[in-house]
Amino acid sequence: MGIVNIESYKFLQCIESGAEIFFSTAESGLDFNKSTKEGLQNIENIKKWFQVSEVGYLNQVHSDLVHIYSRQIQDGDALITSKKGVAIGVFSADCVPIIIFDKKNKVAAAVHSGWRGTIKCICINAINRMIGEFNTSVEDLSIYIGPHNQSCCYEVSEELINEFKSLSLYKNFNIAEGRNLNLQKCILIQLNSLGVKDDQVKTLDICTFCNKDYSMYSYRKNREKSGRMFSFIFLK
Image 1 (tube, one colour):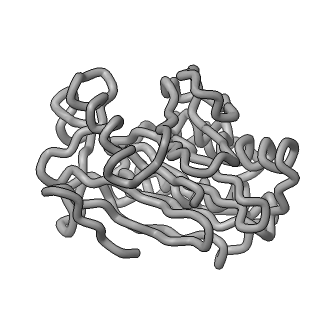
Image 2 (cartoon, helix red, strand yellow; image 1 turned 180 degrees about the horizontal axis):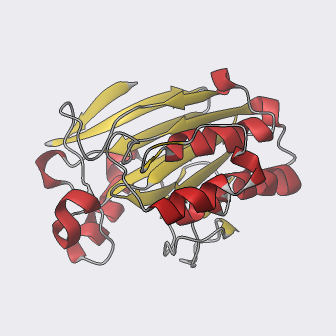
């Protein structure tokens, strides 16, 4: 992972052959909240900052809905494209951003997976859509799990813990410590169930709530005052 500074802003960068992946930070107040003029302007700024022609995103609704990028802003939480020069991304401020790249067929996906999306296995849905529509093979995937509210700080209800534990997917795994749920581990279990190997997944291991190394937005910490980060990929 590298760091790219643009103006006074800081992006975490991961490079793949044929693609570039970025996770924005909250450095200098960079905010991608699309409900604000500032957020919309920063989304537009991605074009000039990263020399891409278009920026794709969704109205995120904590669903399992997956879309192929079509220039429309649809309700959903995963976006896929094979178009070069198009940045597709997801917004987050504690939920898990996941970037998926098919190295062979040059297909990219951006996934937003909060607890609702995780329990609905949106990551599995996105990969299955890539397999079905772009002939993706699991062994050709590189996957990046970005900054999110990690298990150290992600306390939820016992009812939600039990709801996760009731799923057969997790029956042989410890996915929680007390009331602290490990969404990243749940997602890794989902990926493994598809045949994705551990060395295909890179985790940034940055907690949006408690890390001291990077400025991050955390909805749990700041509620309505929190901005939004944008995690995105584009094909070169």
